Amino acid sequence: MNEDQVWAAIDTQRLRTADLLDNLTPAEWDEPSLCEGWTVRDVAGHLTLQQAGLGTALRGALRHPGSLNHMIRESGRYQARLPTERLVADIRGMVGSRRHNFGVTYLETLVDIVVHGQDIAVPLSRDLAVEPETAAAAATRVWAYQATRMGRQKARVFSDLPERSHRFTATDIEWSAGEGPELRGPIVAILLVLTGRAAGRSRLTGAGLDPTGRPPQA
Image (cartoon, rainbow, N blue to C red; front, side, top):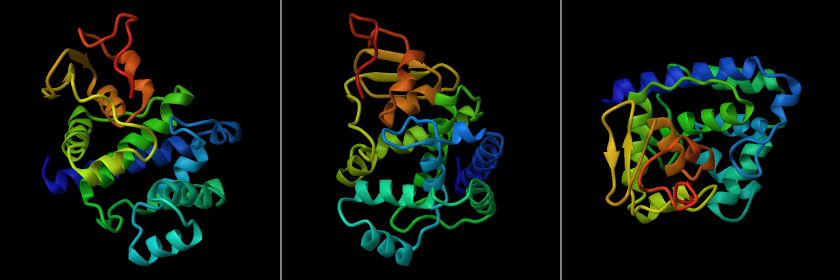
């Protein structure tokens, strides 16, 4: 996907995520997400911060001193205090804009909206569509930046990285990465595993499963 296509995909996922949030019950907003320690509301709060410039980042660091992971977690929780209607409107209001957070690229913005959309939808048993091409672009970026020190730090925001000693192969698009025993499944499930979400494991099959029938731990 070229840059224009990636931004179009980001807009699509923002709209789909906003539509999903718009239809949640009050109880669902307070359900746990796939992100350990974060509710659905916290994830929505985090998604309103996809266009934070240097000034916003510095204010966040001052308000929530500590590690990068701590600042990200607490900034999301801080935003989550806003009314649900405002959270939805802020996510929807970013559609059409090409601004992204200070220190990252539009590709990290794609990963963020795709993965966090699933963080909301999966535990609620809600369907949030993602085109295989979109998920593949996000998975390619995650796989590439896991090989760098900064990338490993970004990917560890919520949990440790999965082993890289496996070959991941998508079954719904031509995409594969890694060497070793194979794990196969939908590209969205692979993306969830690559970003440390255990929920993606149950949708994978192949020789890479351990003797108990489970994929590698993330």
